Image 1: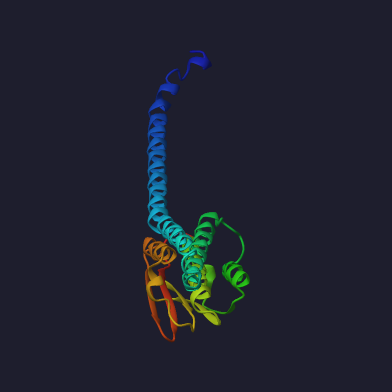
Image 2: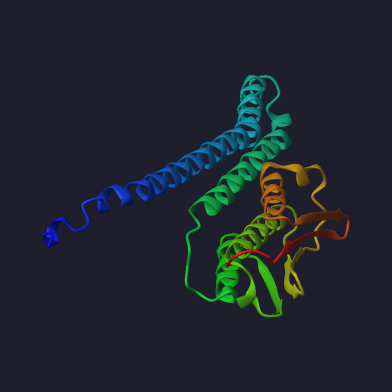
Length: 234
């Protein structure tokens, strides 16, 4: 009888093809992840350059221009200084919004609590009065979609604080296969500011989630509405 230790001499060679397949699949996944990271870094670089960098550069040029005028006609600088201050504060709000989006981490808290904390963060900083109304069960909303919803609320509230003030209404409604997110203020409207960096980032996040974003603004206020699909993994 053949010794037991020699009964299956070819077993390691039989396993080798499977190991090669696993290694190949691992390398493919690694390459895909690295490509996604590179694409995301490039996207943020473009957004920072086209948004925040341009806004800060414009503010610097404006301040330099004002410094040359101060000796000639200081009384005329008040309005221009106020405008420069508003632009710098708006850019700072955009930076805070970006940091909020980048630093957000997974949490085990109920979705409704996450939404409330998102609102409290902005409302507390700007001393806003925000009314929240949730319709439907947010427990069935995928975490990725909930993250986009929070980003929309955060940015819309930040813009309302800068341009509107007063009470703001936030509504989340689970409507069949989609989540409706609505933020409405009663201010004078945002005008050209609706295309600022933060708004563009918000629009892109909604589109990447497969949804759509509509912003309507006029003398009676601004309304931001995002429709987000609920398909996909939680």
